[in-house]
Amino acid sequence: MVMLSRVRLAAFIDALRRHGEVVAPRPVLDPQASGEYRRYEELRSGELPELAPGKPALLPASHLFLPPRETMLSYELESGRFTEVLDREPRVVIGVPPCEAHALALLDQALSQGVPDRHYRARRENATVVSLACAEPCWEQCFCRQMGTHRATDGFDLLLTPIDAERFTVETNTEKGDALTAELSGVFAPALDADRAALDSWNVRCDAAFGPSESWSADPRALVEDGADDPVWSTEAERCLSCGACVLLCPTCTCFDMVESVPLPCSAGTRERCRDGCMIPGFSAVAHGADFRSDRAERLRHRTRRKFAYQPERYGGGSYCVGCGRCHAHCPVDIGPIGLLKELEKDREEAR
Amino acid sequence: MTQQARDPDSWTPWRARITETAMLTETERFFRLEPIDGQALGQVPGQFVQVCLPGIGEAPISVASAPNEEGTFDLVVRKVGNLTEALHRTVEGQSVGIRGPFGRGFPVDSCRGRDLVIIAGGIGLVPLRSLIQHGLMHRNRFKSFSVLYGAKRPAEMLFKEELIAWQGRPDTDFHITVDVAPSGYLGHVGLITTLIPYLEGSPADTSAIVVGPPVMFRFVLRELLAHGVPEDHIWASLERHMKCGIGQCGHCQINGALTCREGPVFSAQELSRLPEAI
Image (cartoon, rainbow over all chains, first blue to last red; front, side):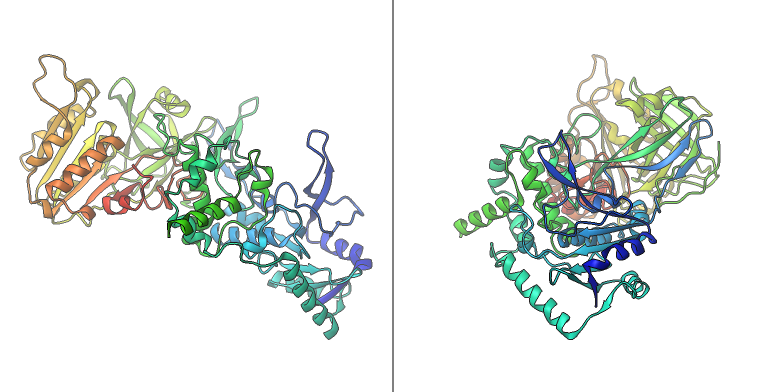
């Protein structure tokens, strides 16, 4: 562990720039959107990241590695020659909150199993992730404490914790983080015993600020596995508009569709993948019009079970929901995982 | 056409030349394809490939043939969307992009030494043709060998010449039925389930492989179980729209199972744990 003083932040960012474009959540005032939001963007020359508490970025950091639309292949129509397109651009992402770092750890795990997702991995392997600890819930919709993701434990190279107004502790989690710490020794100051003690008490205050972890007694996986026939799926899905906001904003949703793009003069084109999701009608449709999850309740149940049961079972690890709260906050009809889990638990208690 | 090495983990297709085509019905076209690199597809009966035309798209299509000495493979494409319509407009000599083969095929090894029953409904005959060819090539690996094929009406039957040849073999038990027939039709008319009680072989030693519409599977499954075929020896191949074939896109997921990886062939026992399947 080393220390980073805020007055050395510019030197830190300059040093990081040697490892690729530096991306951080930046405030965006979009007249089309309702007020200000944050978006991961490259820092301008001389600009420093905010590194301050605030609402999470509209789109999570994982979308930098799994963009909403990306080119997989390019081809020439005449020769039929295909070329794989891999984005190996080095990037440094700074200011990633713990829940989003957890999401990256989950994707790292899932997308390297079976047939590895090389497009994700090419970006990920060439990236450095600097996480920023959260001192308290960053907005009212998040439930990371219940998901056990309020403290960064994986999915980052360096972790910054603002132990006082002037300084961050810098912890490393990977070999890349170790190398960076060694390389930037001139920017960092050594950590004293007092600093380690300060970090420990900061973490204790952090846990307290996030409140008790038990808001339901049962394991979410057991709840969704046992609750296949629970009426909550229909009663909640009754309101669902099938807009897909939840799947499009989720840090761990990875489903996609494939599209062709052949711009004029139609001599060459690209095959692209676009984010898609199981809450969107037609996602499970087959060629002759049959749709195996045509009902909103079936889709809501599928997505919820994917997060809490199917993905953990297939790839290992805990819930594939990291409690960031985006799906609930942006749902136009107030459907969210916490509400679903609480209802499932209530129905289970009543059935006893 | 440019030659590109095959890489099963990538999105890059390899190319196969269309050497033969035929219209099997008004909407189904047959293709025989020859890999340009001279390397056979290497499929297990029941697997599928992703077929693409650059600029138009890609779609999962069942392989309709068993591995053969010529190194070719067959597909049958029903005209239902953009890509399949474009495939219907292709000509012999043209080439298409291929990825695969993908998925778990029919359990040809666990069927060895058993009475094999193949039950095909409609276009379900297409993937099952790969198994029928395999079975006839290795006829001595199975005790009895029965095929039941049901089509809506005689005009919708696929592979009519092959049906006649298969029916003519003394070492197979081959039955065809149609739901509706024009007057003067001499074959069997009626639901495919009505043929099950008359199957050759002993039910306990039977492996039954079923491909057809979901509603057919429900009735056939019930009848096979009533007949005494064990649940773990009844298999079905399911239709889902796999966009990737490599377990990533999520489209073909049934409960926790990925049809492109764990399927498309599942045992009835496995399907009983996948309530979304049928």
